[in-house]
Image (tube, rainbow, N blue to C red):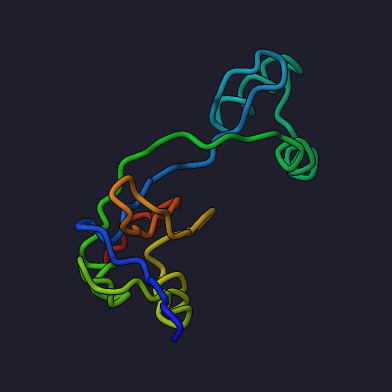
Length: 135
């Protein structure tokens, strides 16, 4: 006989860590915004930067992720994924792709099942939420 132990879903089936990507000022190593960095460069040069000049500089900036707040409810996404506490964990790639393409997130850096201390599994998502939309 073949015994297979499938992990069960954690009491909180899905957790979202919200983040946003921010540029790093190459001179100071501090996080900044694109606007603040552009303003700084324009002050140093004593003139406005040309569009192509700024694009080349901005494309070369290193960036890091910082924690941010989000509005998306993890329970809603866990229901869409079919993840119920105590049930067997099953990854459904089609359902996840549907969520990822829905526009809820502007970027998704990582999505992975993680084994928790109690042996259950939680789907953890690291993403940037899209800005709110108004009609």
